[in-house]
Length: 612
Image (cartoon, rainbow, N blue to C red; front, top):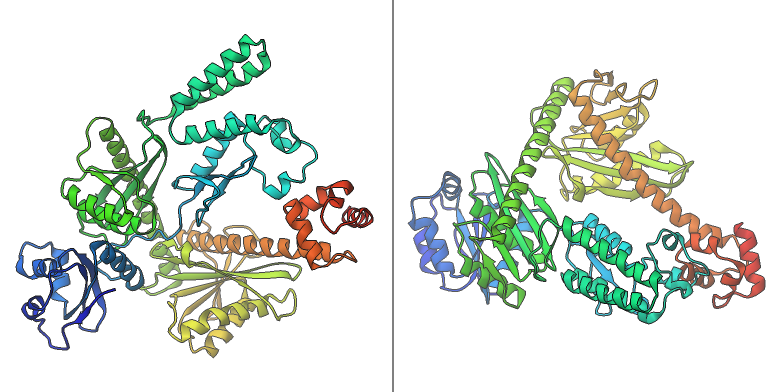
């Protein structure tokens, strides 16, 4: 990656002049360290010498930067081959070290795409992950809802299939989607290859932003069909034109061009910031997404936007055009940085005019509304957390709460969940599920001991973050099991609370079992602290039961076929692959089953009889 220079030491005064004198005029990354060796800030530079010296030669710094510089005891630098390489290293260090003075955006999930597969009869699908050359992808889109909306639009207008290939290959009659006019049923030859391919081409044109071209082609086809007295065929084209016209009329943004662009705006309020990203793909607005960074106190909108650009586009594709209404940034520098990272030309517009200004104003309004809503939610969460501390006499330092729940069906497929509440919000990227093995089926106490041991054994070895409060979904039995495990791990000082449902198992009547005092506390149904406990407990329950159902379903798929004599692992795999799962196998006729390689007519009759 480059040459590294470690400067500084344990001396109380940081010698910036000596450091700067030894820095090269090369791109790289610098790290400011505190007296204890903790990383205060990570930054990148096109020219390390100029960038680092600017901190110590200028005096007009913000209060935040002044405080940070007063804590610097040492600095480390790493030279890189290019600014793009420095950008990658900077963001990897920010994510791994989480320095207290860096603006940090957490958005590690990949964005979804709409996929149109290859083959004679391509299908529409939702895709997240590596893109394959055999398929055509449109996106990325802001979230799964944007993908599903696009799929429903293309189903309605062009009636393209969405079923898996294994299901498509084994259908003997049209499915429900054909009956509700959402699929042209190529699986049973109700549409030819050429006609279906024409619909696929039009769908791709629409996703590329060529709506007018699609409507013109459909109008010509409608006239031809009418001229040949094929009125039913003409009516199909007419309905497609009408649907497209409705879509076009509802589209808030229509640039008239097949344009891919991101429009980004930032809203700032004391102590908080929000960045809104509006995505345009193929000239159509496909949705927006709001981001709420950490460590953004006292930062300018330009600082927040620059941090967003650096971190967001490290992992996500960069469109041809990026629009920001921000005077403090340098469009030329940003365009050079993004172009180098993308490997192609990227245009950056900082002071948009005309239609682009409308886009920027919309993004700005989205950011402002999202920030107001977030602050309102945080205010409610803060009230709840304060009320919980007061009601249970918890320390003012209590911020992080972890909650556990156990889910099973009469002991089958036991799954434990752990959800995390921290900094007044549920932290979904820290949720975990645990498959419970080696216990007596249905023994919830043993299951709770197992998950707590697995969770906190690592933390006792300083491999994780210890919560301030542990909630267990259950009463005195679960709390007793939890106390034993925590005592064994030397973690008896953590607050442990059981949440029992109460005598009538109604919301608002929960009993809180306090491990430290062996007492049971009832909070009023309208107490905000109880509402917080209910919120966290319900989320743990949802997360546990979702995992349990998935594990149970997988186990039952295997066991249903395993119970049939003569069906080994290879044949089970062939059956499930051919029909897209156990439901497809159950729905299949004897003749359909007999078409699977290795399944005779007699075996097919046996499978059918066993499953019905």
